[in-house]
Image 1: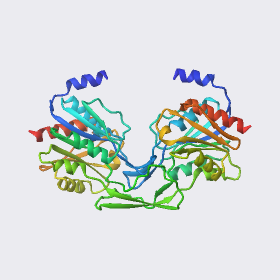
Image 2: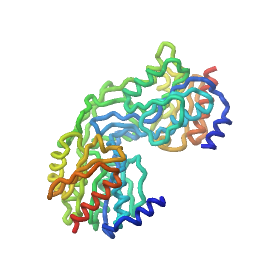
Image 3: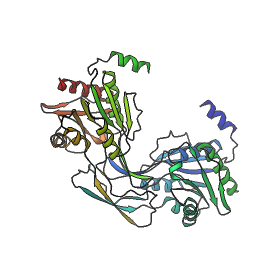
Length: 223
Length: 223
């Protein structure tokens, strides 16, 4: 904690008084009270961004789901366990935010029907019908006066191509592309920042260092 | 650790040299490299049983899945992240076991198809076809010379009725019934032991205490 305090003290206050909303962790869409569909996410990358942004002087609002990493101290923190809850929480706190960084692994689909009671298994096969969830990042980016939006693209193949397309589809200025199989759960990350001016690959580093570089990059875009 | 050492020293060696296999935690059935279907389980109850059984002198084999609780030191520990892996691991280590305690929240169904690459979302709805998994507890109980089998029934309604039926269906001597919504993730548990001689409700207590009572109960059944 002492080292973190010193580190915080030494971090340039690049984002002094900037209001930043960050989502982190994974959502879980319940099929019944005990079973659900989730995404693999430790929460490490989102938590690292929240920690470093706070050290840089930002007023951070963190909306977090399921995570195994330990959550940093930030100004405002709200738990949201499902894609629906996360959407609601983000929309409730998005006014006045200058930056939105969507790191959470939000479920794209959720069950059409969620049972109040534990489903009793009997059949040899089971079919689950899912409906598409609202897209938090795209909806934030299309607000009348949107914050500067940063998305993450965790892909398993054609990483750059998919990430570039995702940036255009969601109409966001900056996207962070990485390989899902390398990034998820790992302490390290290897990412490429993609904005309108081009691609910026960062050296593989721990997620705190990556977070500092992402925030420094976006700070220059804000000015 | 010191306290645990003292506690271990003071615990009667009720299960000296007994070989016990315990499953704990949750499985996760992957839909693609980043998404999966899982069960809510912290691993606390299974880990408490593994810890206390070790303190009682048992030679514990722990087969564990996803868990947020910290895993105790036991003689043998094997990770199994999916229902299939857990089945394989249990069957590989079940010979010579005198007791089998199935605490893990094992997925009853897994996807018919699991994609090697991240599924790209496009449709408004999505249907997932699932197939039933093999039943670890029932298959262990029906081995030619089975260990003493203990099951857990985490139910949300008609707890006693479902638990009694599960004990009969799986042909196991002892089942531990609890309310899923109270037990899952909690440090405490309130359970009812059900065997051929009747129902034995235990006082609500921390999971270590519950573990000790379950193991003491089953010890008497072994003799």
